[in-house]
Structures are given as C-alpha cells and as structure tokens.
Length: 433
Ligand code: DLL
Image (cartoon, rainbow, N blue to C red; front, top):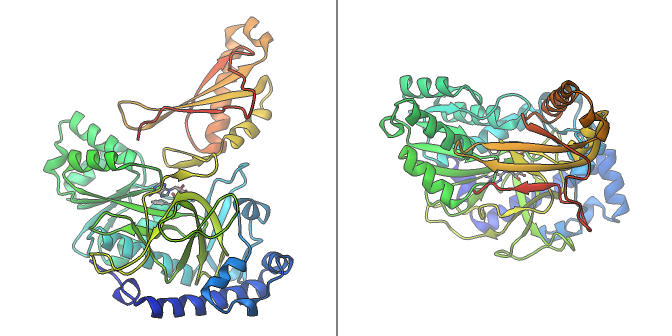
C-alpha cells in the first residue's frame, strides 16, 4: 500500500523542482538562524544565493557527528526553543549524545515517514502493531508508535524486553505487524517455540526490522520462523529516527522519502559525489526540518542508490541494504557503541589499564553477547579475589550506565591482550549475520 502517492510516486522533474526550492529555503534558514552554519558556509566561501541547481549541493559543506557533539545540546537549533516539542538522543563517539530536537511540524513529518514505512509493509488501520523497539530517548519506539497511529492501526506500545509478555500480548491481541530489531525477532521466535507456542500459529504477518545490520540470510530465517514478510527499515537519530527509508513488497532496496530527505552518495575519502549505482558513504540533507535541520550529514553508512519506477509504483530513489560503516561504530543489541566510549569510561576507573578488547558473539539465543576483557594492574591479582570481584562489578555497572548495555567483564593480567604494531585491535566481532 502506498501511503502518500503525491510524493512517493511523483514525477522526476516535479520532484527535483520541489527539492531545489526546499534546499534553497534550508540554506537560507541555516545561514540566517544558525551561527554554526553561517560560519561553516562563510568559511567554505558559499552564500545561500549560490544554490541555483540541485547539483550545487556539492559546493556546500558537510556536517559530521563531531559537529553535533561540539554543539551539544542546543547549538544547532534553527528555531526558538519554545517551539521544540520533543527531543531524542543517541550515542556520540565520546559519550556526548547526538541530539534531534523536533517541533510539532517535525513530529508530523516523522509520523508521515513512519506511516509510509508501515504502509510499505502493508499495514493499515485494520492492523495491530506491536512496537517492541525501545521507548525513550531511542527513536525506534516512539517513531514506530507515531507511524502506527498515523495509519490508524491499533498500537501496542510494548517497548523492548519482557519476552514472555511480548508473546502473551501477541497471542491475546492478535498482533499482525511487529516492529523490532531483526535479532530480537529471531530471539522471540526461539522463545515462543521454547514456551510451547508455535510462532506460525499466531496472526503475525509482517515485521518492520532495522536499527542494526542484518542480512538476506537473516531475513529468510525470520520469515521462515514466523511465516511472515520481513521488511528492512532504515533511519538515524540525527536525521529523524526511523522513517527515512523503507522496503516495499518488492524487498529490493529501501525507498527514501526524498521530499523530506535529500540523499547523496560520496567517496568517503575525497568527499566527491558518486554516481547512482556506486557504493560509498550515504549523506543526507534534511529538506523541511525546523528544529535541527542538517546540511549534508555524513551518516558513515555504506550503500548505493538506484533510481527509476519500482514495480510497486513508487518513483523514489532506493538505497541498497546497508553494507557496513566507514567508522568503528558497533551496534550492540540495537544500541550504538563506539569503542572510544569504552576507553573514556575505563580511564576513569582506578585499577584498570587502558588496554581492552571487546569480543562480540551471537549465541544460540540470536542476541548479541559482549565480553569486555580489561587488563588490570598486577597488584590486584596478588590481592584478595574480593577486590577483583568488586572491580569487575564496578566496571560492569559503569558500562551499563554509560553505554546502556549489559556486558560481561573479564579481568586479565597485564600484557595478556595481544598488542598490534599498527592501530590497536579493539574489537573481535564473531557475530554471523
Ligand atoms: O537506529 C533508528 C532506527 C530505529 C532505524 C528503528 C530503524 C528502526 P540510531 O540509534 O541513531 O537510529 O542508529 C542509526 O543504525 O546510522 C545505521 O548504522 C544503523 N541502522 C539503522 N537502520 C539500519 C538498517 C536508529 N536497516 C544507525 N540496517 C544507522 C543496517 C541500520 N543498519
């Protein structure tokens, strides 16, 4: 089902004109209202009047995650703070969060993007949508919630976790569409079977899965385990959260809501725009956002763009399933984690050396398991085991509060972790996805 044919099936020329008008307006707004952007544009030697065609976007400066970190919390606001209705955040590289501040209009656009996403998976007002993405600062829960309400479906705001209850509700309320991370969808299916509930006997028929990397193989597994259609959905906090791009029934790339977000692919080394079909770093410009609009935001996600009319009837550009990232950001149980955050947290804990190794695995449970190996001072090993135990607990607690994930800490003696000659190897990722 196509939620908004006017924009999703728009002719190419008409869309380009709309995008250009919106881009001009955006650059003018940023120049006059956001000192950070005025300085950036000035130092790049570009003025809003230099934007005469869409191709001129290549003259404009990029925005990177560090810019968001440095302007935390409200340095990028393009409207009075009184107009901000809601804020969301995700992790930044050093633990300073990345903020998205939404006006009423921004929330409406978010609802619109998510209504298109859910409609792509066939959801209508006759559906019951169980939202099992986390609610809170993370954009997954509320984003899916708003979209499900917009399509008029019955929403069950479960949030993440509490698996037995998820299954009970799914069965008792006849959930037809689920929104959660793909790894949790597999975990839920296993747990259902374990508890004697056949996932295929339920009314579930579709799922909107994203927020972490997954594969065609995982899609097959999820579809087979539940007897459903599994759709890939994409978004990021900085741009709006989920609702930026989504799959239709063709399951062949994700349609970008191009009237709201202008996508580009660039060479991550040179920053040069790449033609359609070539793999590179995905960059987004928000075309209508009021709260925290962003110019050419480098997502660090790697994919390519294709264009043309899809068999579903949509004419919007599609991005291929993500290939990975250009930085070292890990997504652990849907939570973004930078190894540097772990390092920053460890420095503050007495008794530890800044030598650590993150070992990631996805066990039988299909959920991410993390072991953090930390070298500790020699004296501690000669001390009573009680002090080791309390240090271990302390690190686990600090990591839980700073990163938002539970990891297993293993304390090791100095020089146990292999040293590399070049860039230190901090992560061993054994997850097979
Ligand atoms: O993960 C927003 C979201 C919520 C998307 C629910 C989809 C569903 P962040 O926490 O800011 O926002 O993380 C954004 O997650 O840059 C990608 O690296 C990764 N990511 C998101 N969707 C996908 C996907 C949300 N479908 C970061 N496939 C992005 C692979 C994804 N990676």
